[in-house]
Length: 156
Image (cartoon, rainbow, N blue to C red; front, top):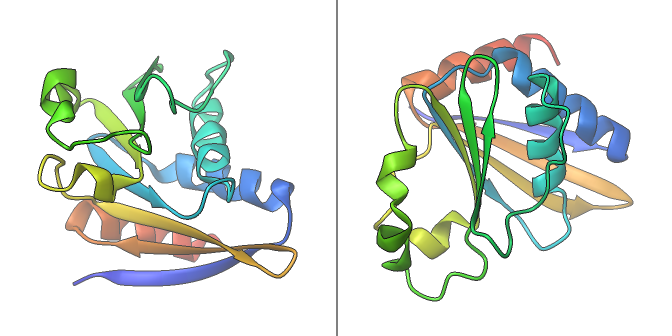
């Protein structure tokens, strides 16, 4: 059922553009896993998406806070960074399940650190270094993810 596309990102501007394009087709509820090495651009993509919803404030990495909430015009967005999580059970103390509702879009960096405690992803974005730029692999896992994926693929 899953579908995948590979996109080359030659610079920060192309990464920004991809985030803006993704934002055009996002609808709540949605869970997006972000994977890739440190510094590869996971937060940059989330920042572009959240700013595309009209958010004018600072969109920062939640590395130390674990989650950054954003109240947008029509949805709530939550950006999780689980890199510093030492035990997935810590997510229960964070009240992780409360964030996943019908009006939320959840972006989760380092999702494997929360294995067993996280809801499954609708879509995954895997970024990797590729020459001077990056390669982005987008995979749709659910019906919701495939709808987003199809619209995105038609407009690349």
